[in-house]
Image (cartoon, rainbow, N blue to C red; front, side, top):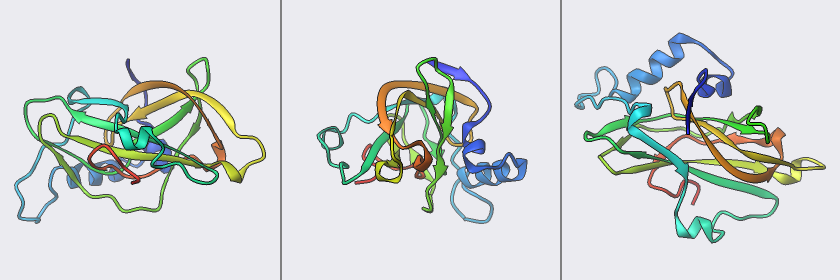
Amino acid sequence: GTVTQPAASAAAAGTSSAAAVATQTAAVAGGAGTGAAATAGCTAAQLKIQYTTNAQILNGALDGMSHVDNVVTFTNQGSASCGLGGYPGIAALDSAGKQVKQAVRASATGKLVTLAPGAVASALISANTASCAKPTAVAGLLVTAPNQRSSTKLGRTITLCLSSLQVAPVVPGDSAGT
C-alpha cells in the first residue's frame, strides 16, 4: 500500500534542503534553457512501485560474490508522459514496518527518464554482504519515488548488510544494474 511519510529521498541524501528539491524538480521538468519541451514530473499517484518482474534479474543476473541486489520499478500508470530523475528514497524495514536504515546514494550520475504511459524506469538497491560480520534480515523496503513524499511498502524478506545499503539513480527499463 501507499503511505505518506517525510520524503525518504531527502533523508537518504543526508539533506533536507528546499533548494536541492527545487533543483531536482526543475531538472525533471526539463530544466531552464535546455531547448527541450518541458515534461511534467511524475507524481506519486501516476506511479506503480514494485520489485522488478524482469525474468533475467529474478533468475540471478545480478547475483555476485558477497553482494545482495534488488531492483525496484516505477511504472507510469497515467495517461500522459512524465519525467522521473534522480534517486528514490529507500529504507529497510523491520518486521513491525519501522525504518531501520536509510540507503545512501551510490556515486552514479542520474539523467531524466521520460516515461510514456505504461513505460517503466528502475533503480538498483544493493548491499555488500562481505562488509559486515552478520548480515541482517529485513522485512521489506519503503520506497519513495524521486521528488515525492508518498511512500510504498514493498514486503519481501531480504538479508543484507545494513551498513552498505545504497541506491542508484533511476534508469529507463526494468533491469537497473544489468
